Image 1 (cartoon, rainbow, N blue to C red):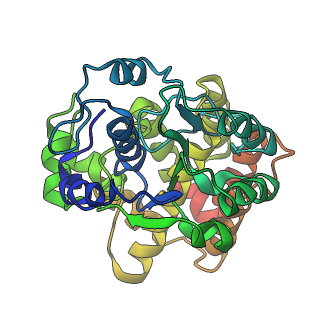
Image 2 (image 1 turned 180 degrees about the horizontal axis):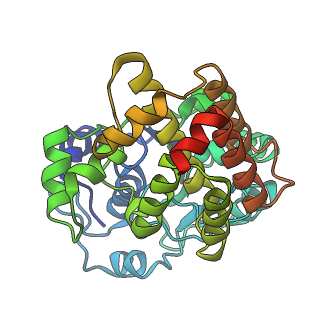
Length: 338
């Protein structure tokens, strides 16, 4: 398990504290920069029996073998979904925005109460920490208030402000570096993808949001329909996204980024996420109800924080797309459709 090129200084900094471990580390920063991978590299190094001089895990000892296979008896992962993390995006929920619930923390507490298999450190990784429910966070807080000496928590957050202040105060905070544009672009160009520049723009300079490319063809269709938002097309894309099991969180992200560029272009003629869609954005801005677009943003946020989770993903997406369509005057919208 390793980290990314832009995290070299982060690694040199954190390894200085390997001899004086906190009860909990909180790794935070922009989504898609490798925070979970970095935390796993820390865990692997601390559990390794024969680490290198630079503190990297050796990759050959029994502990490293267990870690690589995903069944280390002294390492436990708490996520909203399956205990496997490859990138910063650990959610694959379609019908609801995923949460770490009380039951997950209770199961972790069973692990925390056991003795170390190797007679040393036990490590718990929680990611994304801000997805814990209030009940789950309060249960975790009780453990952090009276931690076992051999238990270390590694918490990853994409939105530190959403964590309980009492949780944050009991962690040693560690901000992780966002790669420079050139560093991210150089890394992305080495990956098996096309048009690295466009992908990096769409991902706000974060090179690791692999889910953006998983549904790349569908995303292109989605943007094309947003450019020409007829009723039939909008309902059709919502149905197709359900059939292809696109996570609701991803649908919201796509729509939010498009709305951001509409606002940005209207206010300052700038485009952040969709530089290749300038012509479409320019046309739409002429018909845009500038004040209504913020209400649409509010709806996206309401879904993200779980206020409307009783509804299905498709129902929520269709409602948002209908609201998006109403952002533009009906007369000019009909002209555009023709």
